Length: 321
Image (cartoon, helix red, strand yellow):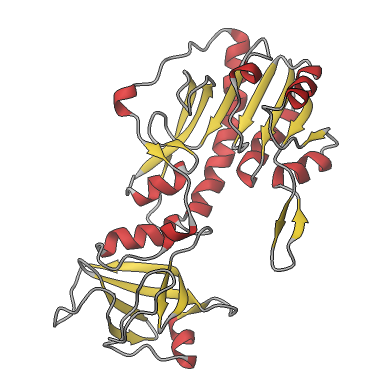
């Protein structure tokens, strides 16, 4: 078959590479336009664009496939199949109708659980013990199409969104190859999703990563892992933002129940902070413009004494404890 691939982040790269190993021909790769990044705001290509150039494939970067000219150009490649993996644009019914064999999607969850843009992060936030990848036939809904093939993956106790996404990317690539082969051989029967079991994983914002110390410690530990590498969990200390890069929930309470966000112990082994239920031991953190540090290294340059309060809202300086 002639295949057009559409994807943007690193998650999509293993699927693209799997397609180029045959037997089908990748006619073009669609990805999001280059974007400014970093302090210098230099234009940076997506991970998929970099891989496509390395592989010698044609690259297309339309701002919006709803544009008739962009849609006509896509149709000009005469694809039999379009494969999508975290492309970042919703395909309209007009685009979905272009390839005779349809459009299929590589999704990083076991659908219908965690439909939407951030399935990995929401699986971690919810405390799921397992997830997987699903190859789905696309329709006009958001991740609502028939399931072609799914494979499971356990979630480790120390998984971050970054580590779990990396594993799912490679699992998804293998699942994609098997799904396409199964479709071609007539071995796969698409099955509808169970709508009663559907959950949704909306996009994350920077503000979502602000630590709410009134929540239980176990949930905050999951949030730290879910927001790594982006948007990164953070709080405020003396009015300054403070990133929390690694933390561990502790079931014990402080000897005298302190308000959530209060530092109750600090030392080389970590900084224990009172939460709505239990203590959160902060193990690795980062101040603005500084390198990430373990708790002991951080405390060598800045004290967080017992009784000090962490927290506050965006744009608000929290009161001292």
